[in-house]
Every structure is written in C-alpha cells, then in structure tokens.
Length: 294
Image (cartoon, rainbow, N blue to C red; front, side, top):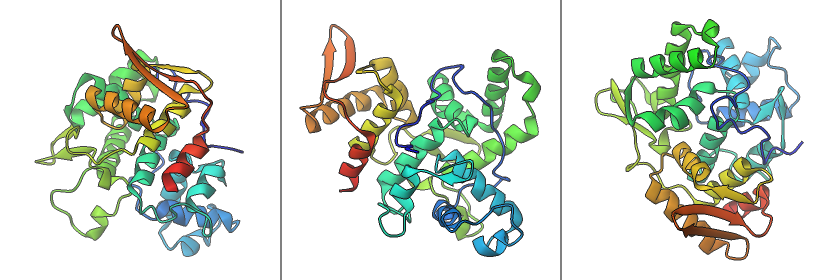
C-alpha cells in the first residue's frame, strides 16, 4: 500500500467523511511517540495487549493516545504501517526517524490537517483561518458547533469533548507561557510556531513569525491535493497556503520558487488576474520527498 498520495484530501466543506474530536485521551503528541509507535507495530506488537504499557513505557491512556496519533498523522491505517511510515521512521533507511528535520515537522503537520482523522485541525487551519486570524477557546468551540449545525451533524456535538480537543490542539502548537515541566515543551509540532499567544487566552495564526516552509514540502502538498489534475487553480493553492499559515504573497513567491526549481515540469502563470500552476510533466510525490531529504 502506497501512502505518498492520499486519496481523500478533505479540503471542501463536505469532504470530511467522518467527524473525529477525540481519541487522544487529552494528550498532545509527544516528540518521539510516532517513532515509538512505529517500532512497536513493526515488532508485531498489539496495542490491546496487556504488556503494551510495558513495551511502550507509558500508561494505559498514553498507549491509546499513541495509537490515535499514529492514525491521525497518517502513519498507520487499521494499525498497519504504510510506505510513508517506513520512508520516515525505518531504523535503517528512514529519512528522519527521530523527527529532527523541520521539513519533517511541516510534512507531519500537513498530514495531520489532511488525513480526515482529526477534524478540528482541518477546520481550524483551513476554515476558521479564512474567517479570523485571532481567536480564543470559546470562539473555536462556537465555530465547531456552527459547522456541525450547518452539516446537519448537531447530534454529535458535545461541548466538553470539543473543549478538550481544542485544549490539546493548542498544546500541540503553542509555546506555553508558563511551563510546569520540560514535557510541556516536548510536543512534535511546537517548533513550527504556527499559533502564538501573549496571555494564554487569545491566540493568533502566526503568519509573520512561523518557520520557513521548504518548497519541496509545499510541492508535495500540491501533488497530494491535485490528484490526477494537471492544472491547479489559485483558490486551491491559497487553501494549501492556509494549511501552512502563509499569506497570499508567500504563496505566490512559493509558486515562483517551485517553478524555478522545476522548470522542465512546472509552469506558474499569472495572466490577466488568473493564477495557476500547470504540471507539464508528471511528478511523483515520493520523488519530491527524496529530493528534499537528499
């Protein structure tokens, strides 16, 4: 099974096939959990086995959380690993098994937003960000409630569940103002600086202060989203930019950079106000990642 290109990118309003706001047991994803979970599965271990807590070295609820995050990041499906998992985490050939490269973190962030296994992440980075750049926890809770009503899914709304999910998302991305221990800094996505706060109450998408997105990771995202299409319109490119908290200017500059680095394969045009990327030669998502990791 090849998972370099996902088949159901949930970008539009009704594209997410299911709604998932729990499973993490209120634990954000720690820096080494994906590697630890990958190794656990490769050894043929079972998350439901009584000795899983000993094998993973964590409590029972954390075992469930690791299992959830593997699925949410697209590393596993039905507790089985795919090609992308091995590409990153294999002990001998993995490109970045301990997630030390910033590009890997950007890649994992993109996967989390687009797998459809963590609804809130897709809704916040794509749909909420279209409406506002500043928000507090209650804004997000109200926003989720509104979207569920619009999608005729109000019956699954549970404010306490959504509140916990929002709290975990913020723990994943936001540098704590006052940490209780080193563990508060040990989440896998925090280094991206995508969401910031000055008071712990009001948050903002960190458009200006985030870390740089490698063009290869952005191109990988385009290939995933476009599927078999040879032309990608600017609305789609903008939406991908939202995932990475990029301004319109950054998206345009990124498209120009991608064209400059792939002149035989890609054309970026901006004619009469119509901006788009055209693939004049088929590109493989795996090859793009291989180019990034060298």
